Image (cartoon, rainbow, N blue to C red; front, side, top):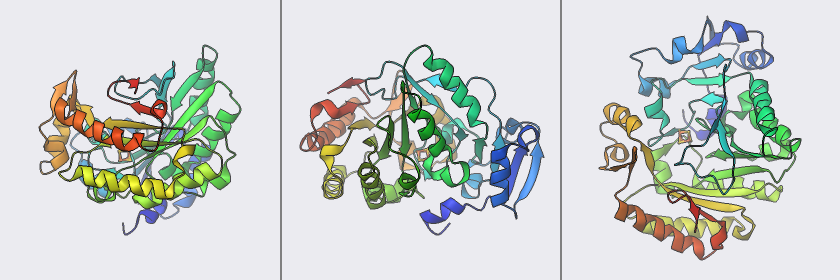
Length: 342
Ligand code: SF4
C-alpha cells in the first residue's frame, strides 16, 4: 500500500458475502466496484471472522472484506472510559468491524482475532433501532466506532446516510471520529449542528511511528478546517495521548501547527485522554506484538483498564491542558480520564 490515498481503493481480493445479504442493494453496489475480486458466499460472517488461529497481522496487511447483516441489538450504552461530553444518554454503534487504518495501539487488535473488515450492509435496521431509542429520550451517538467510518465512505456511503438521518431527527446528535484526510465528504452532505466531526490528533512523529496508513497531521487539520468552513461542528481529540520521551516538545509543536491551520475559537470542543486499554485486550496484543513499545509498556491495571502510572498520566494530561488553555476556554475542554469538565 504505497499511499494513504490508495486506501480508498483498497484491493480486497477476497470478499465473503453472507447469502442473506447477497441481494442487498449495498452489497450489489460494493461488489460492482470489485468485479475482479473472488466472491465467496458464506452462511454467517462469524464463520469467517471468528475462525480460530487466524493471523491478525497477515490479514491486516492484506485484508479481505466481509459483507454481513447485523442481527440483534446494535446500539449500546457508552463505556465509562469513553467521553460522554456532558450528554445524558450516550450510546455507540458499530456499522463495521475493523478498520483499514493500522494504529499500533488500537484496541481492535485485542478485541478481534481477525484483521479482516466486516461491513454490516443493513444500516437501515440500525437507524430503526435509533428511532425506537429516540422515542424514550434524546440520544448522543458515536457512529464511527470499531472502525473509521469516513475511511470506508467510498464503499458504504454510511456517513452521508447518518448525516441525513440526524438532520431529520432533532433529538439525535452524532459524533463521527476520524483520522482521515477526506474533505470531499463536506461537499456531499448538508451541514447540521448535531453532526459532529471529531478529528483525533497526534504529533506527526507519533502518527508516523504508531498510526500507520492514517492521514498526516497536516491533512487532518486541513480536513477539519474544511469541515468548519462548511458549517459543521468540529471537535479535536487529543486522545489517546501517547508517552514518548520528548513528548512535551512534540505536543508543543503540534499545538503550534493546530493554531496555524485551524480557527481554534470556532471549535466546538476538545477532548483529552491518555492511552488506556482493557486488561483483557492487552494480553492478546502483547502476545501478538512482542516488540511493540506501546503494547509492552508497564501500565498499571486500574479497574480493569491498563493505564499509564498515575503520576505520569497526570503529568502528560497537565502538559496538554496547559497548552490547550492558552487557546481554548476551560468549559470546552473535556478530560476523558476524570469524566468531568475541567
Ligand atoms: S483509526 Fe481508530 S479504529 Fe482505526 S486502527 Fe486507528 S485506533 Fe483503530
